[in-house]
Image (cartoon, rainbow, N blue to C red; front, side):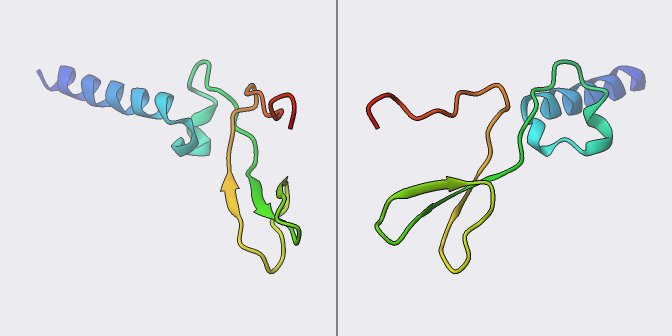
Length: 81
């Protein structure tokens, strides 16, 4: 009975890490199958003219928002912008 409880808890932990890969410890990432690759953070902010900018380095002296995305996600803006 204890074996089933232990396997259930281990399975739940693996399922949690599989569905939230950004919270997976680095030493576990290599063991999980088909884990999507996440990129480093991007930074969304507005310049002096109020235009939205997204860069790989945070701006100095400006408020910004940290953005993460999957490596296989489309990050291009929609046409016409």
